[in-house]
Length: 251
Ligand code: SF4
Ligand code: SF4
Ligand code: SF4
Image (cartoon, rainbow, N blue to C red; front, side):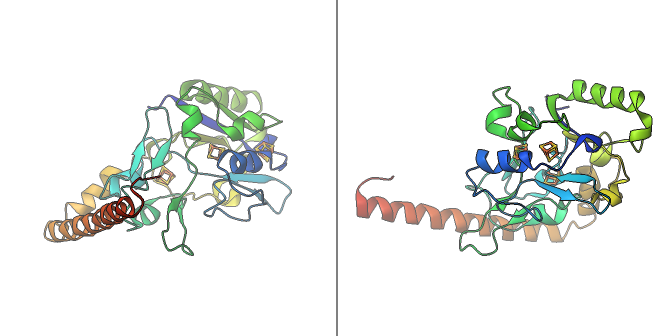
């Protein structure tokens, strides 16, 4: 189990958007009001029709499917909680986007050098034992950060103290085998814009069960993907060498 987690309490969210702004500022993005998750919106506070709000962000799964399907290990789960993406390794196959049960990763379709974009659970802060930017600014206690055990305990305490406020479950405690983002919902997942059909077990072993049934395809496909990755890396190495040749230095 990872060290840290976020706890989002829907009943306390007032839709102020401070978490969105803090996230954008932390990631050097232009200030804007998100209307969905996209390449410059790693979190989105959705305004629901009954005046409540839902938060969307990477759930930072404990055993992430995006990590398990990536053929070149461009995604990685940290023991602190974050799931990060490495531009140097990614070959743009977008398997991670297809595999994510929460529909989180987005892609820079407009770019000639597109990147996979998503919340990184403020890895640069969390690995220094600092709270995520979004949790550090939330004025109401709707978004909280702490050790996962402590966040689970706090969620259970809130549930027991005010059962009428919540659906009764902690979203993320079991979904996809458990996530580093836990949500106390006041309304069912599907009414909060969240998938309600995510299996309650870690998904990588399910995907591998399927893959095991395709023994003939995998080696060929693996070789193809490996080849594509090699070409990408080779292209970069050539460009780097040319740059050095021209400028005599590499900055
Ligand atoms: S900062 Fe807190 S209260 Fe404001 S929108 Fe985000 S989660 Fe809701
Ligand atoms: S929510 Fe999706 S993108 Fe985030 S860690 Fe889980 S599988 Fe990966
Ligand atoms: S954890 Fe960090 S990257 Fe993720 S939504 Fe919050 S501020 Fe943004």
